[in-house]
Image 1 (cartoon, helix red, strand yellow):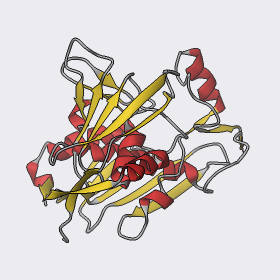
Image 2 (spheres, rainbow, N blue to C red; image 1 turned 45 degrees about the vertical axis):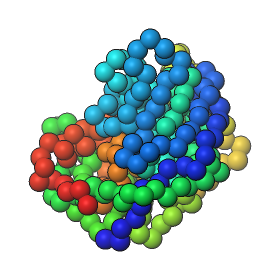
Image 3 (cartoon, rainbow, N blue to C red; image 1 turned 90 degrees about the vertical axis):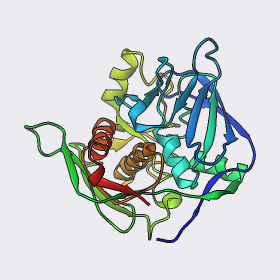
Image 4 (spheres, rainbow, N blue to C red; image 1 turned 60 degrees about the vertical axis):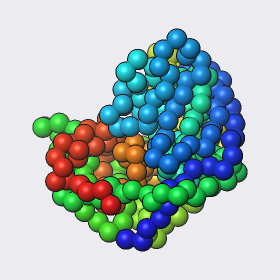
Length: 290
């Protein structure tokens, strides 16, 4: 394996946007961080208790409609997966993310705006080698003991591979399958532009239950029966499965380093991704640190 150095950003950069579920404006400040810091979120609106939340799979708190983290003081940061995927895409290892609200801005529903912001701040090489998590044994986890059609797995590979398949009744989505190979594909152009998506019936239900309050056609692909409601259509004919891979990348980066291994998922989501990581780390023979 060719050695590479850890990276942070060269200068501080800010942004603001709306939280897709809260509907509230959040201001975010991205700051450089020292070597081996990892990714840390700081809730600046929380004053009287520990407001630092480490981006760590062990801190995953909720996985419904996104990945949320929580610290030992009960301070939470929500919907982190698109940002984590963007941090991966920008090859950032160490970063401080300050927020004045609970939720990460949704922007256009992809991770491309985060990569753009981080690149605008400049990528700063640091005087310490990157660490990689190398998968040594295959592990697999199913949604439950009855339905074996929904699963996620990790197995040894020379590079990061993500093989994902989805299946929806809506014909415009249908069955889609995509293999992302990090040794050949540029994450920024092949995956990061794919937007989150939902069915109109689901959006109506979520809004009735005070969710997706900030959601719109500006930050999600919405499907109604067999048509896409977004005036500009899709960015890729298989944008749906590509976005699922984006979610996987964000969830996997919560291990704190890039993974060398093959992930395979079928109709899986944030909950199964997190359970897979817990299973991975339950046995030291499953992995090594390179």
